[in-house]
Length: 497
Ligand code: SF4
Image 1 (spheres, rainbow, N blue to C red):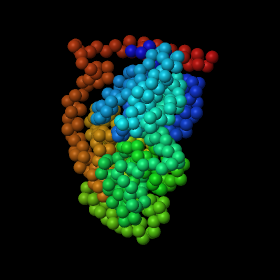
Image 2: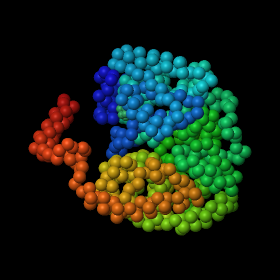
Image 3: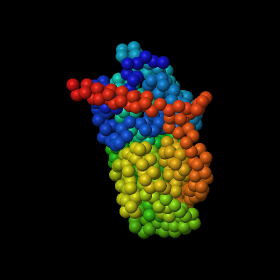
Image 4: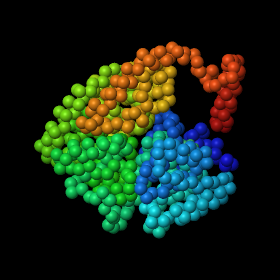
C-alpha cells in the first residue's frame, strides 16, 4: 500500500477540498474548465464506477495506442480489473508512486521515463497518460511531457473524480484531447488518409459509442441525400481523428461530448443534436442533417420517404405495452425513452446522469410534450424515488436501481448490458426493444412470488452470511448516529472558524 497524505481523498472525500487542492497545485484553469464542461448536479461525486474508466476504455480500444495510469494503487487495481472485465485486449500501463515521489516531483520524472521507454514507433501511434485523483490534486504536470517522442504522440490528461462526474464524460475528456492534437497536426500540414480509405461523398461524423450496426443503418439512411457516414468518435484508430475532423457535419448522437464538440467547432464544423430514433426522431434528424449540408428539400424528402414507412411498420409490428421508467448513465436515455413511447409504452420518467446540453434539447422537448419528467444529472436517489413513485411495470436503470427494483418485486433491466447492446437507430432500432421489454414485464408474477418467498431474509441489518440468528442492537445504532451527528457539527464549526 502507498503511504499518502493525500490518499484519504478521492471518491470518498470532499470534492470541494480536492478541487481546491488541485487549483492550489497549479490546476486552477483545468478545474474551471471541468466546471464549465461538466456542470455538476445533485451528484457531484461519482455514483457510478470511477469516471476515469471512460477515458481508459477509449484508450484501450484504440489500435496502436498505449494507455498509462498514474494514480493510487487501489484506484489502478479497480480500473484495470474493470477494464479486463469488459474485455480489454491489452495491458494497462501504471506508474506507481509514494508520498516521497509525489511530494518531491520525482513522480513526474518517473512518468516521463515510462513514456520514453514505451515510445516505440513500430508499436505505437500514441501514448495516453491519465492522471487520476491524487496526482491531479497534487498538480503532477502532464502538460510538461514531450508532445511526441520518436514520432509517437504523447497525450496527457487529468481525469479526477472530483472534476469529471461520470465515466461517460471521461470519454469526452480523452476524445477532446486527441481531437485537439489531431487538429493541430492537420493545421501543420498534410496528414495520412484513414486506413479504411476516404469516402467519395460528404460524410457525417457520429459522436458517441453505439451498437456496431447503428452506423451502418445511419449510412443507409444518409445515402439518398448523397451523404455517407463518417467515423464514430470515440475512435478506434488515430487516423480516424483526421477523417472525423474532415466531416463538415457532426452528429452529436450522445449529447455530452462537450470538449470534442469544442474541437469540431474550432474546425468550423456544424453540430446536429438528437439521433435518428423512432419515426419522429428519424424524420427530424434527417431533415436537420440535410439542411446542415445544404441538401435540397426533395432529396431530404426522398430519404424520409425511403425509411419513414419502414420504421412505422417495424414499430407497429413490435408494440410495447406497459409503464416503464428509464434511467442510466450512458447518455442515450432520452433516445431510448422516445423509442419506447413511439412503440406504445407509457414512460413517466427519464433520468440521465449526463448533464443538460443543447444537443438533447429536441429530445427533451419531445418527451416533455408527452408529459414525461426528464431529469438531467439524476442521482440514484432520484431514479429510485421515481421508480417507487410511478410503480412501473418495468424499471430500466443502473445496477443498484435494478437491485432495488427486484427487492420490491418490480421487473427491471440493466441499461448498459441489455439496452445499449441493441440497435436503436432507424428501421433496425424500431422494434428491437420489444421482445426483451415484453419478456421482462411478463416476469412480474414470478418476481412477486420470489419477493414473498424471501421476505425478511437478508435485509438491512440482517443482510449477509451469519453463523447464528443475527441479533439487532438498535441502542448501539442510535449511539453511533448521535456520535456522527456530533462529529459533523464539530467539523462544520471548525470550517467556519
Ligand atoms: S481515481 Fe477513481 S477510484 Fe480513485 S479516488 Fe478518484 S474517483 Fe475514486
